[in-house]
Image (cartoon, rainbow, N blue to C red):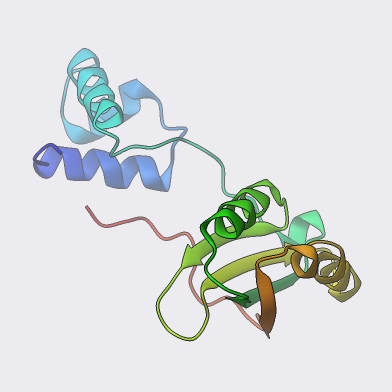
Length: 153
């Protein structure tokens, strides 16, 4: 882990808001030379602080209008079944996020589908066929209030 200074924090904030900003524009905004900025960004990447770059996509604009938070309960905590469950979750295109948590549910999934029928197919043909899954409770997302906010360094 590296110690972040004010310039690093500014760089991280700017990159999170626009990962397509040019090196020259970023350097100008932060008040550094382009070569010094490039080395700084590279150090942040090497330290694992910057994991990747990407585009934020609007799910409804792509026809993905059904979103749910799914609370998954496992049958038991057999290590082999858990590994199989995690592998299946990682490969599922409908599952956007997965968290192992404390509390009543073992895992929480954020799922995106085309519509309710597609979600039902996801449940019947995928989730309920996983041997580790005992049950799932679905909370349908009615409205998104906050998502994909930059992390304040």
